[in-house]
Length: 333
Image 1 (cartoon, rainbow, N blue to C red):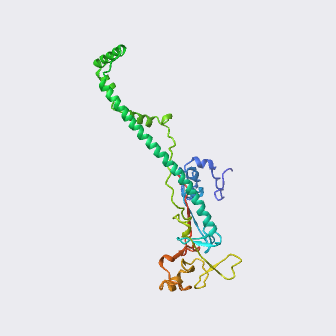
Image 2: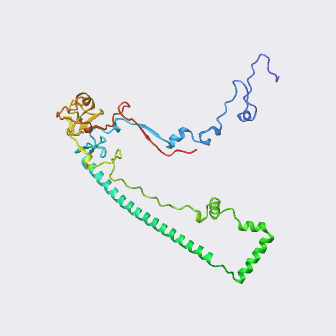
Image 3: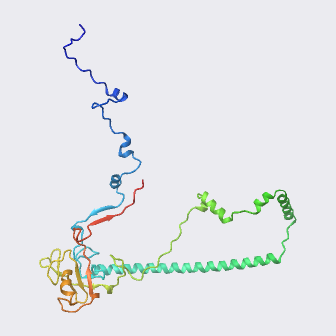
């Protein structure tokens, strides 16, 4: 009565518990269990930092793409980053406000004067130290000469107790010549012994590093440009009159070419020092350069009168530098 009929359906046995499967041999075939990832494969268990982790932590060189909003428009001061008031052009082609560049050069000139005074004071101290050193060396030579002459002219006499001690040492050296050789002939000099002690006992107070005074570099004669750092003088600056685009006088001013009357945005621009004319480089190449004559005033100019005004360009790679990089400390593994 306990037996199941042959034609009846028997229910499948329940699967074994999971903890039994973990300690038994893994099954084969499609029914094999998929185990979880080991903890050693997680990112936090690695003995080194991945590239993604370094980037998220802020280490290494960061690269950012700059848009048009990050570019300095034409006619703006490179110091104040606003529309230039009484614009001045430097030999490098940068436009500055007159007040801003004058104040900058004045402050830098005062800094150079203070640095030059400190440098001259340091040079006098160095000269004094060198003179004292030479005087001390000369005095040592004189003392050494006198000491040598006295040792030759005078015969050394020992006291009775010193004579007994000397005789005792001679007896020891006579019966133990190897010890005498060790005591008399030392292969290492005093400096070599000190160097060895410094290498092996660097924690001693007399071997700790000290702060050495660095010598100042000789200051430059005149201040440098805030952009190129080349020497810049007030007489090197040239005033320039920019023609404002009609309708933009009250708001953010925009400027046009004096020859073609086109708005200047990111195009290459040329400034003639002797005539004060600002024009697009395309107009300069076609109208002014062949005859070396200004197309507005009719005055001739030379090559030294031509200044290419620096432009920050646009947000496109073809007209400007659109990639900015910032360096930071590297992360050591």
